[in-house]
Image (cartoon, rainbow, N blue to C red; front, side):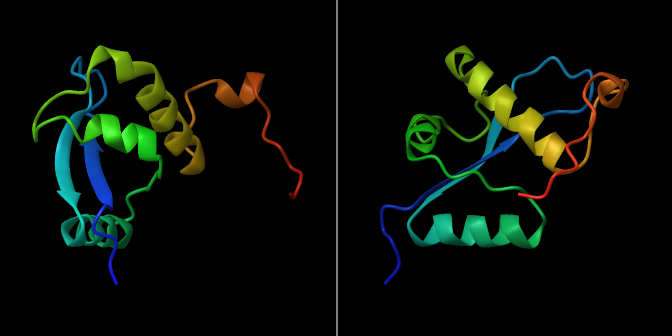
Length: 103
């Protein structure tokens, strides 16, 4: 049985130099949420599960920018996703050498 309370909210952050905040580009509940998550995974989109954050984002409309109160947490998630993808700012590796330990 599918979780009818499942939520999925997709955000898109603009191009480099874009001054706009991330926007809600997908939103669904229940079966639609499952489909959004499946399509995101198939497209290589990173997924972050956080019931409290999704609850806050679920109050936004499609096309709406995230509120300023969420800038910090969303910025951290975007930065972390870049690191997971091996993308680092110029000069980053000079001051932050990669960790070569296996966990």
